[in-house]
Image (tube, rainbow over all chains, first blue to last red; front, side, top):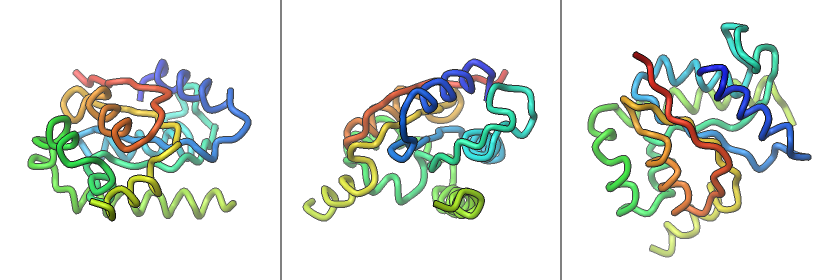
Length: 111
Length: 51
């Protein structure tokens, strides 16, 4: 994730009294890259190069291609906006990987 | 349909969504459109490009 995006996210989250209501939703097709972005907004920038270096926001992170996310979005809107990517990337694998990430975050940020 | 509406309410309704799309995957505005339809408030959107 580039430094500009990290700075924007940090500013928005820190401007609020509570971060309870925030969620992050990713759309990367490369799942390894998506995992790095997920780590950046939860545990901090793993490259220690951007504004989120050492900043653990602990935000719940989802991928738009997860089956559980898809179920929450009106079908016509989802098919029009995202549909074709769901055929390119395996949604089950995305769901499993992001569930693991959220479990890891919950472990590191017990509330 | 009623079941779908209940699930939408639980997961995204009233949430402040930060959207990080990707040019070669799902772009930010497409994700934002989906989340808005599910009741979330979009507070940040970007579309990353790795070339």
